[in-house]
Length: 225
Image (tube, rainbow, N blue to C red; front, top):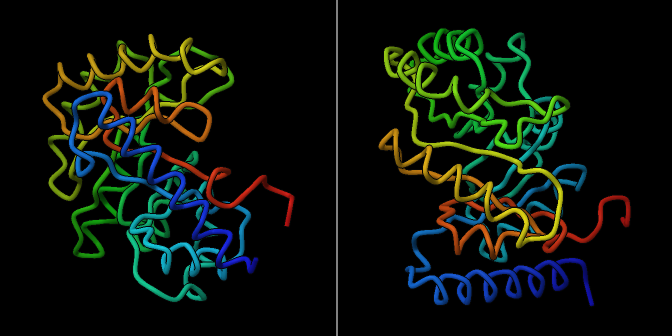
């Protein structure tokens, strides 16, 4: 089996699992966006994923996306899903359609300035440290309402939702964090809820995710290529 065929088959398998999870939750498949996480995989794999029907791709690092994107054939929406340093705000705005990891007003203001300079309205999500883990990025739950209000005052940013990476654990154990994030999102009147990865995206969909970020189930284990 060629690499392109492998990616196509894996993507079809993930698609079937998403559809089944949506059916269990009584949701429409159209309510969930699949972001194919392409970090460390080459541009050729991203091209194959787009050819297999992936409409959205996610990268963790600005520099990796900057180097890779020009070599990718096909059109997709590019999401930044890794921590963003404020000194890379300008590059991030230039490269990404969606920045999912805004966690401070300082970073938001940097992005707003870069977006205004580029004549762009940048879509963002706020990253929430839903498990209150010291080693993880993200704003604290209690800080999110004020951060959302501050971002709303920046006309070159468009806040559409929340993103989180819950503490590692079995899918059933992560449901409480997914529910907490959904309740927080609902309290702010936002649309998007980016949560769920390869090991738990089905539970995330059942708990209301509108964006799932899946890498290994599509491309295989990192370092295997």
